[in-house]
Length: 271
Image (cartoon, rainbow, N blue to C red; front, side):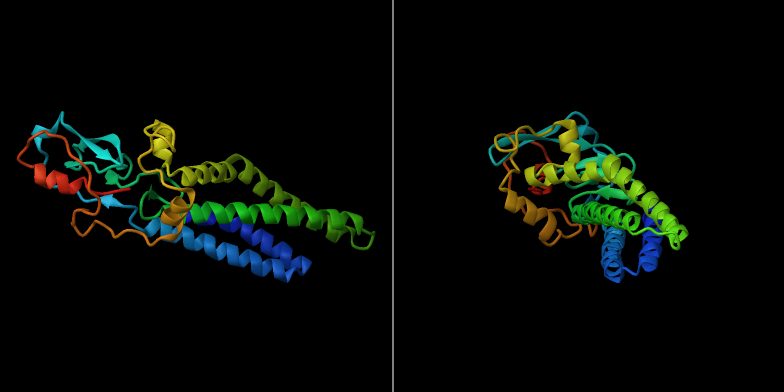
């Protein structure tokens, strides 16, 4: 699916480059190539990076079928449910993806264009991808409008065939990018920008798991901290080596169980 995404993005890129060569707009060609390289990097990096899969445990414990743990995180009570497929208590903000059939930390959504889940470790590449596509589309649309207006003003009988062809192709590419921007990528950009600023995931927002960000969201800090943690900070280490996460301490309930210590270590995870 990732290669289909590359194909969908490459077609308008090639058409645009042909037009830019025809117009001898070399600065715009370089600018467009840089954006295209960043977009390809984001696609392959986001699609090939472990999104934050939580390792499965061998066997299923029948004693946990109806058990859930209540933990207190920054003063807010959260419920940790048992995943019968992965045989684990899901850490905070972790959900099981039915398509990948894995539990993913800070699960946002399953991205068909990347062919994988978008989660704790690859969200920054997904956000970089939609941001670059949005900016590139906006700039190309503005540039195309300027070229079309200039071509119409400078048109003469000798170059009328050449101008008509250029205007037609450029108008088609601009219309394609405009529709793509308005009905798909632009909406994604607006939604995920809001989610980053509020430190929500798309899944949490869709399921309404967290309420008002400033009052009831235990993971809400400040806008600058959200931007830094999600888009700038180094990504967390992968858990696929089998190690349990132990970097955040939360309060457990008073329920006694033989596996309390093991489960208590396992729920010490995600901000």
